Length: 322
Picture 1: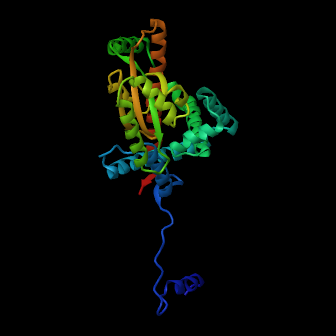
Picture 2: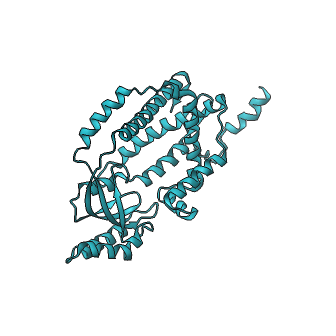
Picture 3: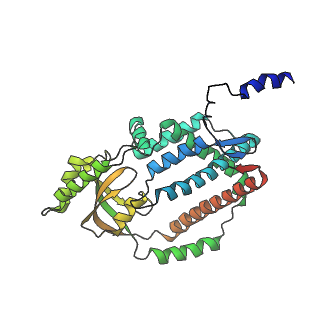
């Protein structure tokens, strides 16, 4: 018997009268990517954040949603590992100073201080450090795109003109929405039943009687937990498609002017929404519209080529999903 066998063998023998200990799984491997691994705990952490930030609509299949999202998250994390390999090969570097500049720019653009930014992130299940880490990955992605993907992108004048003609036809009759809202915040991890009840009670107060718009604004100042619009009576100004979270946008665009809809559940909490006006879209000058379309087509093609680049990395890598 070798020395190694002699040292190991006694540990494998049961001791009379003592039950063998049950193995405890501390973590597991979700995927092997070249020389790196994606841990199950990494997938679960992102999944929990996503389920909190984007709750499954009432009546939806939560288990199906979790399984679908888990698969998507795993593929994203596999891609991140492949990009990390490329970062090392290409010697791409994103400094903390670059990340901080983006954070400060975002805060200035939205009129936030660090406390308000942290509060907004908390509603999405993120810490400031996690947000910065995500930004760093995005900036790294942008640098790799500049190095490896940008040269593949082609957008012709004919592409732009064809898209302009299509958009002109689609935009006929399109509009923006002018609205107010009252928000009842739901803290991360809570179900939101008390907040929904408060929203229902507020709705009854608003719809009982006349001067609906005035009562809504008064109650927004009294009850709303959105610091950005509370003092303005819940006034959100105008917004277009893609500018609000999907649940909020769907409810606002479906409502007739002069009506209150809700309570509407989003990642932030429960909303009551007063749609005040539908504002017809103003046509941009043709030159500006063509320039905007060219930029959008370029960004879309860049994203498509980036996905193709990732598929090429996956094809050439060793990947084992478990």
